[in-house]
Length: 451
Image (cartoon, rainbow, N blue to C red; front, side, top):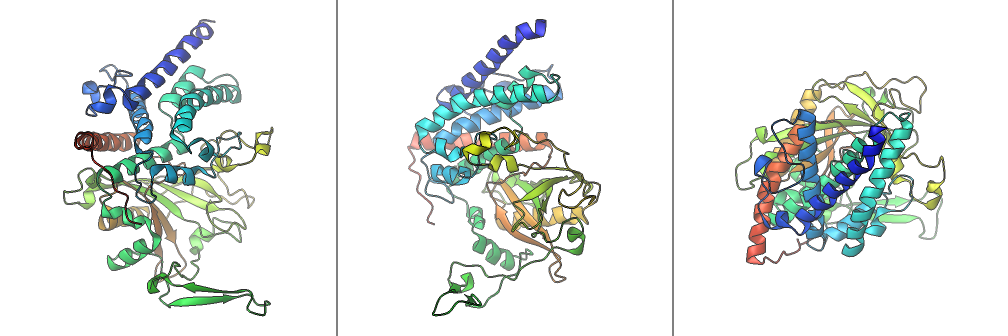
C-alpha cells in the first residue's frame, strides 16, 4: 500500500528531473558552460556521490549524457551534417521507416520542423515511458517496478534505438565541431573500398570493368536492357560478384538465406583530439552481433540478432528489433505488432526447427576484433564510432572481409561494457562542449561539407 501511495511522487520527481535536465542543457547553464564530470558537473540533477553503488553511478552518468545529447540535437538541427546538407535531413531520412512499436507512424513525421520535434520530445518521452513501464509491469505479472522502469525509459534509456540515436548525435556534433575530419569520407561506400584496398584493409572484392549491361532474357525492342557505369570509371555503381557465406556460417542458417554478417562496433579515443597521432591502443571493440538472415530474405536487415561475447566468441541468445519497423495504422491493432522484445528469446533459428545457434562459438573472434580495430586506426581513427559489417565468406582468397562502415552506427541489440562506452562519451563531450563554446564566442559560421 505504501509503495502504491508513493508511486505518483516518484513519477513526478523523475519527470521533473527529465524536464529540468533537458532544459539545463537546452538553454540553461549547461548550454553556456563547460561540460564537467563527476562532482564538478554543473548538472544539478542526479549528481553522483560517494555512497552510490555501481548501478546507481552508471545510471546517473547515462542520464547526464542522454539529456545533454538530446538537447544538443536541436543545436545541430539546421547545421551541416557530414553526409547531408543538414542534421535535420539526415534525421528525417533515418527515421522514415522507424516507428515506436504499436503506433505505426514513422518518426520522421515528427522531426520535419524544430518546433514539432521539440514538442514531440517533451510530450512523447514521458508518455511513452509511462506506457512502457505499465506494459512491462503487466508482462511480468505485476512484479516489475513501475517507478524504476519509468526512470530508466525517461532518464537513462538502454534500448537499441536510444543508443543508436546517441551515437548519431555524438557523430553529428563531432563532425561539425571538428570541421568534418577526413575519416567521415569512409561513409561513402566507394571511398571506403578504394581507400581500404590502398591501405591493406581486407575489403569485399569489386570488379574493375568500366561497366556492365544487364538484359532481361525475354524482352525485345530495346526494352529490359540496363547499363551501369562502374565507380572505378567515374560511375555511380559499385559492381561486385555475389559473396557467399562460409560453410560454418551457412550451417547456422536456413536455405536459402542472405549473406549474414557480424556487426562489430569499435570506438576511437584518438577522435577526442584529432590532432594527436593515433595508436591502435586507442581503438576498442565494444560489441559483436551475428545477424542471422531469415529464409528467402534479400539481405540480413531481416534477421535474428544473436549477441556474441567479445571475450570468448560464444554466441548468446537472439532477439529482434523488427517491431520498430512496423509502419501503417493497422499495426495499432491488437496482435499486429509486439511492443517489446527481450534478449535471449531465440536460441535456435526460427526458420529451421531445431537449428541451434546459441552456444556455438565464432571462429577466431580475437582475430576478427583485431582486424576491425586495426582497420579503424588505418581508415578513420578521427571518427568516434564505427559499425563494421564483417563477412566470413566462402572465398578462400578473402575468408574474412569488410563490406562497409557505418559511422552513425547501431549496436543491433548487442551487449557491451557500459562503463567503457559512457566514459568515452563523457570524455568526448568535454572536448566537444569546449569547441562549441569557442564557436559561440567567435560566432562561427559552419560551412556544409562538399558532397
